[in-house]
Image (cartoon, rainbow, N blue to C red):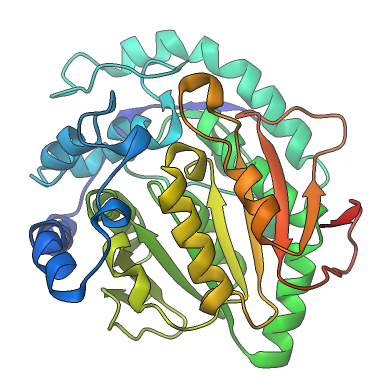
Length: 367
């Protein structure tokens, strides 16, 4: 049975969550305020550490303004956090439209009745989601938390909208590429899998990983302004999972949030590094720097790099996959048979050595 989910059903915030949210905001604000001092004291390249290209402070996006709005941590910002995440998803959830939109200062104009009138636009995404999940085990289905003002159509306990579909596509790609089976094998052998996501958005993919892989240690490296969103989304929806902030945090089987300017100090290895859609929005030096860190430490020990990025040269930006092709030994393209991805672009696995995954149904192309 399909039902409609509206903000009044998902925006409730316990008082203890507001107190916790303010603690998270304080951590994120401190990381923003200490950025310049850390860069200078540790000799970090400012061209890498500060936002650039599509994420530059003077670029046509609103993430700094959104950061300031959400950092207030009132009941509206926390209760309806998802209304403020369009800068990451490329989708205005409460208008049910793609593309950039005005940053809302408040949500008074979005009553249940107004939003319900816009939900007809959600039906194509519901149909797409159904096709993606029809034959999947429940473990491989992304179910967004029933909070933060999430809206859409609900079936089998899953609130479905554009963003649910976008993240479900990525999970399907991981399944099609044999990555989930490979991680299961590593978890059984080692008792832990270590994952690093470069640019975690508002935290949706990390939410699924922590549910699907209880033995997962998950690290997000992102602009400190962006860590506010993923920190709130993950910490409040998964209070049972330990969290740590900064490169010195040690939280096995937990969640760790590291500002991008501390990336050089992350000298450990990971089983899987992930980036979706944001590397082609960075500058060429920034992408090359991340690749260098992957090759030096992060995936040096038989790790894999999974990415889905668009060719953004027509926007005056870059095609990050051209850089990856120069830098990595092996590439495996991963696709969903007969389907064009919601955000277009291509998905690939990259490695410094041969890629040999169980159940892989995509060709392996070695550079």
